[in-house]
Amino acid sequence: MSFKIENFTEEFKEQFIKQGGWEPNCPIDIDRLNLIEVSYLTFEKTLQTGKLITLDIVAKNVVEIFKQLLISEYPIQSINLLDKYGFDDYKSMSANNSSCFNNRLILPKGDRYSIHAYGVAIDLNPLQNPMISYKSETENYANFEIYPKDGKDYINRMIIRPGMVEHIVEIFFKNGFDVWGGLWNEPIDYHHFEVNRQLADRLAKTDKKEGEILWSKHLAEI
Image (tube, rainbow, N blue to C red; front, side, top):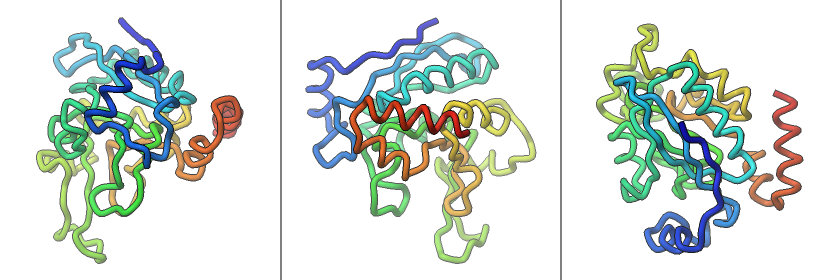
């Protein structure tokens, strides 16, 4: 098993920027990001290792989340950095990939940065936990999109199957990721966990020392 937290090396940072993974308008400074390595259990019950990028302050709790998921034998399809998918979230979702940091706007019709761009949001098994977005202002189930499309088989959340998140939500909540997209009205985003936007903004605007104080207070209040 492997659970590691590392700072970006200069070589990794240079390559990451060159590939388009980070740019100056990103809400979080690149030096505030950590590279995390975690072990996980696949649907075939094999042990694999994957990598995530997170905000430095939440890194320890992200590692703890994946330790608890492994202990509970929760299956995960894959955990890859978004460069494998050209930083395209739709491609990552279609591959049923679990991820964290991605410098992008809110999908599918957002005009501001996603919480993923702060490094404080995690997507888990998008296929088994799809996002449902209505095409119109009327929340009508005859008029909606499913991301990824193959997630249509998991719209019925009453039939619990491997990889669905309902029974592991508490693991995220206890580790500070206390906003679950499965409780939203539009979109309904079952695979998405995040830190609330107000706290994400504060963490991004403070230095690491002050941010750790804010994060500790947040954990104590949950």
